[in-house]
Amino acid sequence: MVNLRYLAIQANDGSPHASISNLVYLQMLIISSRKNVVVPKTIWNIVNLRHLYIKSGENLMEEPGDLQVTGCPCPSVLASFQTLSQVSPQSCHNIFSRTPNLRKLGFCGPLISSLDNLEFPNLGSLAHLQKLKLLNTFPYPNATRPCNPIMFPEKLKKLTLYRCLTWRF
Image 1 (tube, one colour):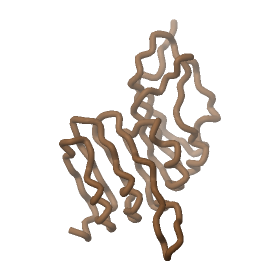
Image 2 (tube, rainbow, N blue to C red; image 1 turned 180 degrees about the vertical axis):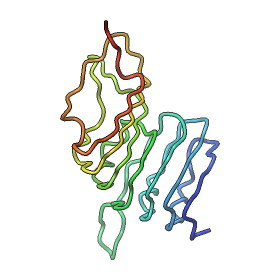
Image 3 (cartoon, rainbow, N blue to C red; image 1 turned 135 degrees about the vertical axis):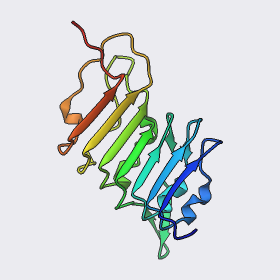
């Protein structure tokens, strides 16, 4: 199964095993679980990975480690990585520099601050981002303040907001 390109798994304990990185030719990974998923840092060793779809929950990405390339430690960059869905905004701070060609991104988690501002990680380095989904899991009693349009990349074509705004009439 080393040559596998597509894999859809049901992770009963909430996380795929770290050995998933042995599937070096994997291009699409779909993870379903009834629990929140913790994506192991070994996922960054799958250099051909293009799409990571997580089907449910508020999911975490482990901090990417460094790869050993010809004896020199180099940060793992997934140049062909294009899709990341249903990931917690708290676990994405050091991921975007390693996914320069990300086109589709979905956040799921607390996106409203205590000051009723819409908050998520800085997307400035994602020059190719075209689709963004924001799924807020934090209850907000007051209307959310509008966010600064500078927060969004220039090439963004589609923005989906779920439980992020309250309309006042």
